[in-house]
Image (tube, rainbow over all chains, first blue to last red; front, side):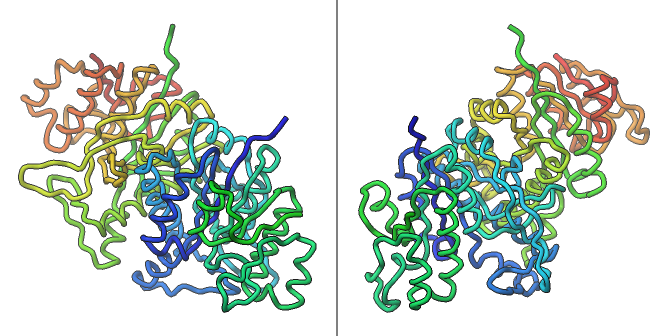
Length: 264
Length: 264
């Protein structure tokens, strides 16, 4: 029996922080047919709110150190402001969005990050995705919109990387669906030449990734993103597309070969 | 055919603002058997956050005037902080809570308040409750936790009174369920003598309400609350219990006659 199709799209700060770009993206996302899930990152709004309240954000290795005050802020900004605004905008378009976090329905269970030397505070690493509850929401006609928060076994909300949430959902739901995982970022794909936006590599098989790192095509902040994608494919996601958010309609509805397609 | 039972509980600031009281309440709420829904108010946290950001809250006739900055704050505090903390605490107890607003699934459709002389800003008055989506969530095993926000036809989020959300849900869902509507507030019930906590009137038929107002038993801020309850009963809710949150377990699970029961 063929598994039903499911599209999972992840967007980050380059969309969430810019109302015009977000609006354009949501118009495109609305037009994607069939089962779909959106995962959004946090962007800069949490840092701005922190500062307006006199709390200076602390980042280590690109991750926000989350003390109890910062956890309140990200719960408000990610789980409230951003998540509900996206949901309301999609509802205006007649997409039946429901804005949730991994804490709702205990859908994404995580544990507080253990690190030998750094205390990241209330930051979660994912243990388990509860497919049955996501399927129940999809079957009820909802389009789940996930904010980057999860929950531990004791009911502690944890700040969790949106890339990891998206890939964990894609991996878990590959058991039940033919998952198309679209990973939006600020470039048009993985670029051969960082100065040429149109030099994106159309197709990468995961066996080539180490070479691309060795030869310097995949560098710096792209390395963890690509490892996330590699892991998703190793764990059963059939294809992952890395692209610019503005290309998703052409990619998904018109099957245009934009962005970088990763496969086995 | 008998309609299935559904318990709807509304809590306000006297619970939401106090972690120990909230914790005790959630332990009791967790123990309520069968289909249930919780509606929470906003409490003082939004005003405190406003002030910490240099925005002075404006209240007219007990309602928060909601300009665009204040709407952001209530979306963060009601839809994010309070809603997700309640959800996470219930999940810790193994109640399968899902934290939503009336904007999610466009479950509660409202319009911006029209008033002859006061501009309340982004404040919503409810037009319609979408029962089918609530039933889908209940059937999927979720316990919906509603923050006091709704949405208009254009996708505008609107700040909406939690009492009205609770009674609108109770009225709409009475079509499909035998609704037990429990309205928690800071007293043990409607008091004959405001200075005696135990002087609560055990049973009021809605026909008696006007007399109780005329003779001064129902006064001031209680009048709109009681009118809300009266309307709920007139529109098909079989019974409404007005009580202190600390009594809900005794009332619902042990059928103790605490608080004031309103009936036709």
